[in-house]
Length: 438
Image 1 (cartoon, rainbow, N blue to C red):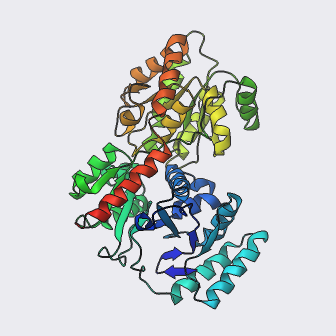
Image 2: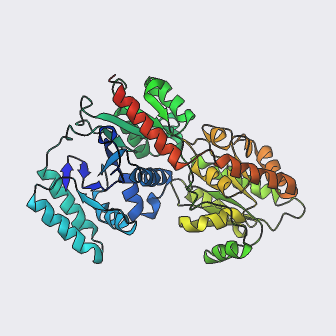
Image 3: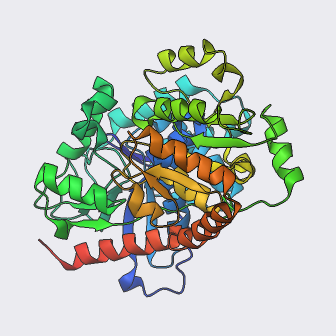
């Protein structure tokens, strides 16, 4: 196990590259900090976690990659990540085997798998390693790729091509939507990019454009790698019993409901959606509808929650669920009349894509990347136009043909996105960077 400054490179993953031409096999150091965070914290299972987890899964299946894992953050999560790989049947071995001390600690961590997880002890071990090891990445690596956090300064671009995935720069462009810490973190991420030597993966054309305008980075150094929805987790469910079973588990209504899945925060524009929902309840035959909001609470949510609880109409009809594990979401998506996502800004916007893949009609915003993801397979509205959202919701309820058409279009549209395609485009970007010195 080797810690390199803030980077931890504990394991070489045994890829399926036995039959590959070794000259074409790239040695990749991939940071999986966000994946590790999601393994130990439900609140960490955001879109960036999904990206990190699925990209990692795809990389592990490739024969043209020799993969090494890195932690820029959350070193205390390495044990839980190791257990995950063992359960998945992925072999792990040392990157460096020249230290008896490292071997003893590795064996100690292995023995502790069956013991109660000890955050403090793992953190102390990681910090101890960090104080002992050098602060440089071996020159033998072709690529260092951070899936989120800033690129460390000590990685020399003369020897290793440096990549970073930019999911959005929302908190720089729209500071009112974020905390001071969120803005600071985004600035650190963007400032870590050397616009002359580094390479960027952007999750959408919208994010690519924002980054070019803000940093001056050439489009030639930014590759678009769209995200995807995992088909093993998100798929249409027609069996009403299966849907009702998931709804019952989380004490949710089994009759007509609208759905939003998002972190509850101002940027998601859910107060606007709830106001529109309240308006349509006065329409004939619609007073019984419910609105389910799935997701962790973010910042500036107390006022929103209090307003709903103090409203005699909404308090019985708007339901906050908090976090719901992925394996139940297909049923909850599939049972909804429509998925509502009127966000002001998204770097990509995974939930609308997940909803489409489940065959759920989508109503979303005309801002940032959302039209790029949804295309003509959903209803696109101005996220400040209450009449437009109200009418879209009413049309979904009253027009069975429209609902069926959007469901079919959504399923077809979702097929153009896949994690394999995302990984293929990532590998192409790596190779382009290796073939171009500048």
